[in-house]
Image (cartoon, rainbow over all chains, first blue to last red; front, top):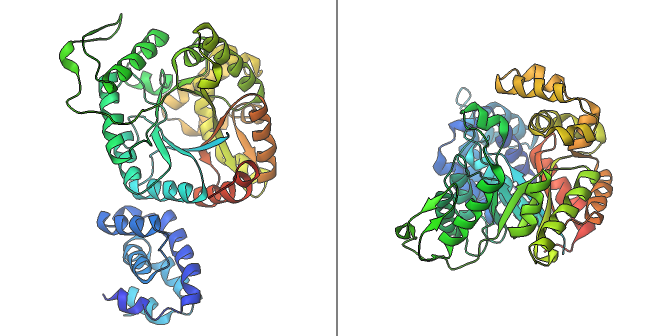
Length: 94
Length: 334
């Protein structure tokens, strides 16, 4: 799944708010333990550098959320009008 | 100088605790303390990960104990951590939590002597002192030296609640972590720390005195109070009778809570926590209420305020609320 390519389409003014919302979901997700530790460490790497709203940061967040809580993530993406990414993380519709 | 720390209990997935630690550093907190209980994630594994993903904030165990971990191993752990985070390591040590020690049939014997000797051994190990150590409770031979050097000082903070341990903190600690939240308890504790320092011929200003509180901040008082209930239950369970009596809490009630906690009867234990217990053992409220309470504690003589568990109804939001609405009242931020 090429999230990196999809993330490029997210308008820049939206990225900060989106990363905040996605991080909120991740921190509360019941299945947070499903996230591969390599992906978790990438998120921490970008957070340490305050770059979670960058393309790489958002890519890591999406990779994690696909495992942790795809449904809530889809809702947030819907709220932000990011239909293409929402479809990409929803296997039933993708 | 006023310092502000934050405590995390590593009950969460490692990356969540680390996320919050990075958040704390970004917001200008000065120190991170990770609790040490066998039923949560390992304290030093947690600290090592945090060390890797932070750059400036101080970090260390808050607190370890010499009953479950031999002081040579504590010395080894903090010395090794110092290689990951040079000059940033702090070491909190105390007699431990009675409730959890009892779970593994480890009595808290001779706590003053145990903590004193543990601190002496940790310092000897870090300094690579030659010769043996002949304590009453711990002994090390001359061969027990580290095979590596420790290039930075590692301040040792003694966790204390009772009068003798507080005096010991003043006598030998680089810092003291007062396990209390109420101004009366803090005032009493500071006096004892000062007394201990003066008796040992030290300037009390050498001791960084921290109020290690149970803390919760939210947009209003009601939302802030609810999360502290479980933590206050543990505090009540572990408090000595004279502290309970000072706050008008029946000792039998505390013993019942301890028994319920030990047997994992959470509903019973938490249901017994009342408003008086919360006011006695936690700092909680809206940001303005917390500012007022923290100011009072600084007036009592502390130099360091630690926001301990639970932090608030939503950890990320509460860390942010404290960092944005409380910290700037006390210090200039980066």
